[in-house]
Length: 505
Ligand SMILES: [Zn+2]
Image (cartoon, rainbow, N blue to C red):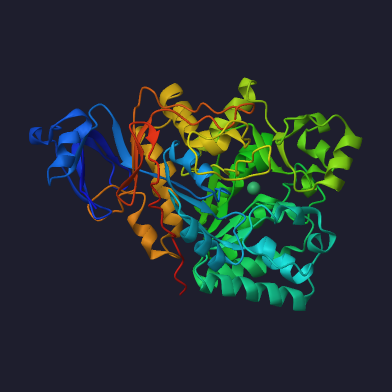
């Protein structure tokens, strides 16, 4: 592997607070040196072409550019080359499916290795599929596309008997032993289940030194009859069992009550609980239309009507309650855009910024796979063939967060942006996956997962209607020392991504 010298950029390392002009030397997949800028490093030809001919490093002039650790996305449901390339163009070097997870994880890692991935990847143990195996007799083949129709399976939505609980807790334990990065809990999709079940999961995770990643159940403001407030449930489990508890997309589960839910999290953190929280900067989410919280009778609690739902596949807006019932019954796994906040309304836009600005709030995308009209979900072609559909957050979460928080509102410095996008997410995994300790930093010995950004051009370009437009301003992206993006374009045939696996205690 040829050495790479990123010469003369503004190097930002959120781990140390470093922010200075320097050269970064990459060797054997790691950062070898960060040293004062040397004039001798000036490129020998256009974009360092001269360097490649000689035995020395490939020299890339990154003057005027920001050089930082690549983004670590804790919440990506993308299990495809196409989706990962969109994320690469958004600055992501590690894309992890920790909220839903896949089962069995061993199969998920093997498949990614067989097919090749541009980005580092990893998976949590899937609470959803472990419960489905026991309560509904489902076998799972780590299939991210086949599993969504479980969402309105009656047996799965119900409580577990003590014997059933024992069995699926055992399955999760096995998955942790196989290298799962924690336990992903889609509590919001089975929102009436006994809180004792969640406590059993939190207890197992804490004992194994593994985090939980939870899509919380309803908050009390949305449903006063909820068995427990969703945010409080996560905070309390972290307090009681001492494990690391990650609260997924606080923006979409809190909607207009984010003040209160962040207050609940803040109180737990002040009390010493290891609760972390993530957000994405969009006012609409995407999920399977069969989800419990999209039942016609549940929508009111969310300030929603059926017309706030748009089917992803053909961009058809749901017309009325009868239409909603029909699609839920006939195609419960169909992806739907849920407009839970109005981005054009300044009050709602401020709520989104508040979720991101909360101290230590992490940026995570909730990226979804891309589907084409013929039903295909991946391609090695780039640029992506036309007609693909996803949620714009797949392509734009990180560039959009930086545009909003750094460029437009000045709420984050660059160091703070890298802390939120790279450093803090990696720290959640330090305990379960020692290899994570080399991520989210830019000092000698760190993994050479590096993003080079043009600070004047960085922005998202994907929209709800044109959702696969890549972000702009990510000029270079290295994963384990190999270019995945170079000069603003995807490098064909570059699949240096590696599986990040848990190492059980
Ligand atoms: Zn979710």
